[in-house]
Length: 164
Image 1 (cartoon, helix red, strand yellow):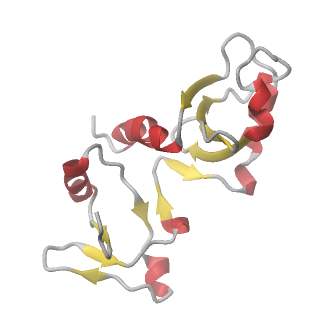
Image 2 (cartoon, rainbow, N blue to C red):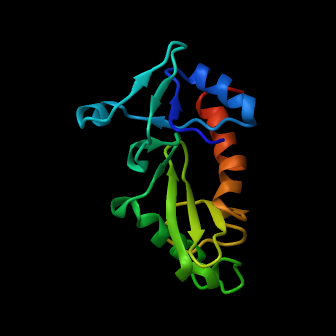
């Protein structure tokens, strides 16, 4: 669609209703107060839709997931510990190419992306600070971040917002 503005809803229910017209809706929340305090312009339409020109990514939230920063990058080190020296583990040869990009506030799940291939790996870490055995840590593989958004984030949001 060639829209000139970002369309915003005031409630989760409205956003889900509007988003459902275009497939599986993914809720993106944002904090408007810092933007309005900084002079950002929002316009309300007659049908109670809010418009703005764009939203800087740092104001977006994909609950229950949040983007990582340097302070919570410890999970990459934990993944390396849990895989350890198991060269048979399919992620072992990729460890140096992985970047931690998202973490769940609802579980011990972390999303890593291979910076060479774009593949994503959602892991459930144990945080035992030692090498795991067998099939741990549990890992789900996605070809792209878009596939993860559609399959994993969408499912997590169903439970987080109690939509199921």
